[in-house]
Image (cartoon, rainbow, N blue to C red; front, side, top):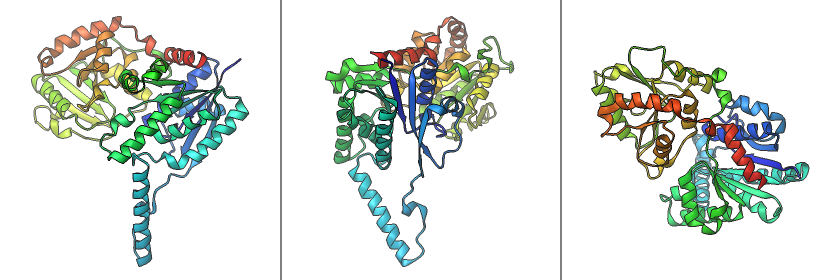
Length: 412
């Protein structure tokens, strides 16, 4: 019997942030591999353009979209100007506050969209004879509601994809709210036939919490997409700029990266021919590079579409910076941007604590760890890494390869 797979994704192109990348890529490659798929995705009226629109276009004929108007509570939309509008404003704020307190994590607003998703899922199950549902978190609350369908559709395989920690990253919540999140997580895990994640440490944590499900937990990593690389070729020998050592960072700037920035500033102070370009949305931490000896060698630029960024990596970079913050477990995350780096065959300079990220970099000869002990040997380590990465096999981290691992979980 041929499998019929429904992928449910709240974040999906044209949603512009990275949360929409993972499942539009997997959907595209599952379709290319002749798996019978259908996608159910949200589309907010405020989302117009995404870096992954071309991927979505390829499978648009297999996609059902639920159109939503991005909801903003009254007190955030209007400034009260009259007596009655002030009362309405206060009521709106109080209701929103009470609702958030009752529903656990206040940043998860997906409860209000769940009824429409559940209704659409049940219709697609009947119309498309679905045998497997893949659903992903975040948003966590929507994932919980989808998992409750398992009781009604016990013959369908439910595959739950947890991209980030759930309750383990919510210790800041009060006892009641945290307990609510822990219960939703527990029910979702127990309702799922297979639990997948791109992070090994997430799975390790879940195995400790839910030992009865540990044999149903599988690593399905992020990956790079050959389609994103111009002509699928890279320049491994040199860059256009040959008057120094050029490092490139691409991605968001997160909290608790002060130590990393101080280390990079010291690297620049001790090496007059090193330059850094940050492709990021903000200019956070720019003050770390104010020293007159280095400020002209640091540039902050807006992010580029992946194909343009690939060209920059190939033509300008001697190495690529991958940073994680000092927050607990952050060093165990390998972002999608990390995998986008791999086809360039440029060494990865890692800044952060030891964890899964550094383990993979060292295992595959992808680069080296920059810290206070290694900073004095930077040029030697870079030279060794440039030779080592030429021998590394990164093809197993392509979407084409990782999709085969996902297919095995669908078929088993």
